[in-house]
Image 1 (cartoon, each protein chain N blue to C red):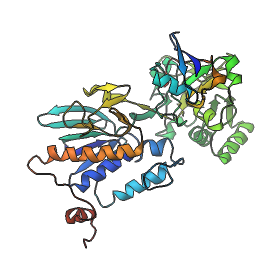
Image 2: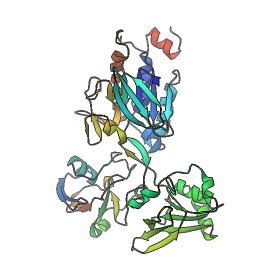
Image 3: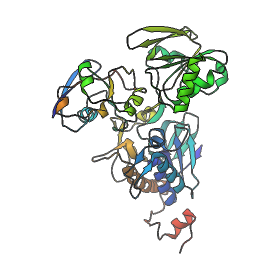
Image 4: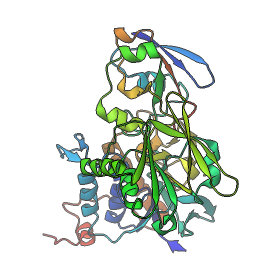
Length: 339
Length: 106
């Protein structure tokens, strides 16, 4: 059981800056995120797209913003729990007991939800029957490529993940690559290579087709793919891989007893606290009259939520407002010299 | 102003007057039309405002940009008449447009 003054759910820009604010005022915190990397939507949805409305930063990409926020956290020792999704938040005496899907548990007076639009999860195939084979013979990521050796693998998708795996697996497997249109959106060199492999019959390429049905009892036997003219082809296959990117799902947050409307959590604008004492929501996931879904709003919300955390984490102390330019204590925390 | 008809998966018709300059996505979100999530807020980064546009209208609308077709690869059950509603801007020319909302966005 990890004890901390505040637990932040979400390592996007708002979560990162909230961590900074907590550390500045002398509180500990840890951060949990379902993605395998820090940065949230900035890193997952638009790493290379320029952002023009971060105060005092005329232009930066999602990736640059993330890197700068990480650099800003360098003076502090903050533990990140990546690849973990918070499943359960339960009241235990005065604290919140928080559990992740990996079995990590926290006890904390303060939980700050900086969860964007929820956690990122793979987009799945639409036919319902696909669920039955999920994680057995149908996957949305590759953990161990050895299981495919000598087998037939049908790969769906038109981006780099689909292309890279089609090329890689074609060395030791029979590969079908299926995509809904003729154009692929991967790196040019990879697309060229894939077409070369298709020409040499190392990859069986099916464009303008999509998944229509999966067949098999215990084991996957074959799949039907369908084109826009409703023509169906049946492909024998041992495994199916789908690479359609990630989608945000509110997920377990919906079960924590919070006031949720249209995937956002109602908060007050003094502490950004939810209807549950000690649970706050900041950034895109919170809602209040006048809410703007801007990164800069998340920074403001995080700064105020952090101050609210102080009261519950240090009930016997009084929070004193200080500026980073002049406070000796803050400078010590930052590890910089005082004048 | 243009009249936009949103037809949900269960065949409910919602006829909405949408201001020129807004997107078809914004018209839906502001009027609580179910089935358009628009998670990324119109940044062409999520494919959760996916709609099907009736054939005759599909060809009348300004063409898709490259990024839109790429995002549609990610959409739930994309078809040849699929569009991202955040990329369709409402104007006098789109008065009468009908869009069908898929059964889900993800």
